[in-house]
Each structure stands twice: as C-alpha cells, then as structure tokens.
Image (cartoon, rainbow, N blue to C red; front, side, top):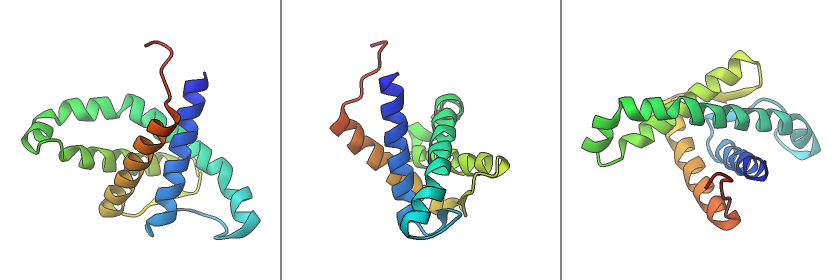
Length: 133
C-alpha cells in the first residue's frame, strides 16, 4: 500500500511539473495563489490515478503491438507510446470532466518526456520497492 501511495505521489508531482512547463498541457482553474492549490489538487490526484491505470493496463498492450517499431527505432518509438498514453489520459479526464487538457501530439511528447524523467529521478530518490519482489 505504501508503494502504491508513493508511486501515486510521484506521478502527481511529475504530472504537475509537466502541466507547469508545457503550455499546451494544463488544468482548468486559477493560475496562481491559494485558489490554484485548492482547485487543482484533487483534479491532479485524479488525473495521476487515471494515468497510473492507463499505464498499467493499456500501455503494455500498446508496447506489445508496437514492438517491431520499438526495435526498429532502438526504443525511440516508446516516446510515441508514452505520448499516446498521455493523450488518452487527457481524453479520459475530459470524459469525467476533471479539467485536464492535452492539446496536440507534440505537447504530449514533451509532457511524456518530462513525466518520464521526473518519475525516474523521484523514483531513484525515494527508492520505492514493490511488495511482491
């Protein structure tokens, strides 16, 4: 349970950073101050949960189906897969009216890079271990 909560927090931080850095990835609501924190915290946690679920269930299928392209591009096609996962997360969040938006493929690629690097760094710092290992 602690590992799940730690990964959820790490994903939330990475997603918040991507929304802060990329202009075409954003949460609706106030742009600064206490109001921003109050109105965007729950949507951020919800989108992080959606992203975690999409990563857990959809991404392995996408990776398996695109394995020839991944091998041909020496793994660079994984950026496309991660961008598609982020765009799917934005679409699902839009269906639930969470207030998270990803406008376009290239911002999704940039956001996926930011999320991947941030998650990798925070995972190394925190050192989250799975219970079943």
